[in-house]
Length: 322
Image (cartoon, rainbow, N blue to C red; front, side, top):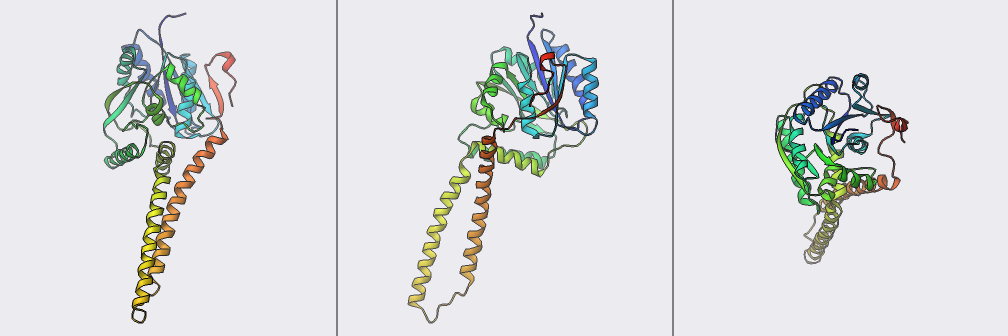
């Protein structure tokens, strides 16, 4: 048996038929060229691709036994699948990297060097991006808002790209969180980390799978997991509106008593108050619903993913786990 330390590289995929083989080759070449003192494994976890990605991964696994694969039976979302993949790596450390080449493989040697210095977590932090400038700006605003609202430290421009020591993965394994938000978990529970700045390149090929709904889903997961501001804002605003309504009511009462014959405001104040209160109630009912849905998901404690198939794992692990 080799005495070399093992680097695991986990690559989540969803419809990445044009990128699957190039990212495998890039990761393999980077490790063999710049980290020759280490052994390695590469794990693809596919989130029910429909474009031929699975066939490409199967071919890679057939040709290279260092490459493993887990195929999910359904698309379990952008958070559950990568964390599940991380938990099924076997190396001394695990590097997570996206298949679209927006996470530079050239940072792998830097991650490993920092890990050998003693850091249990080494993350990539975007300082610039070649993606849509408006999207990058919007993400920056989102990170700043969450950082201000949260009682837990939040890491700006961090997507999950980084290196994680086996000890941190054991902490992650003990959480049993059915909706893990790795960015928040790293900030909240992770040991001292090192941050390495990088410029995010454009996607190599294919189209991004993020849309308004998935971005909103990510925002709400972090919002409900790490902030109380939604419900507290509802409480404070409720007190404020109640006090304002009382003062308005008192004003109209005095006006009616003093200027009964000449004062007539019609139905305008009533209609404005009704629509104003209705809008506020709907907004905070939405907030409340998000918190309840988050709680409900955690209470049900469903599995992160359900596997359909796994390749190149040990014989005793070949059976798909529920």
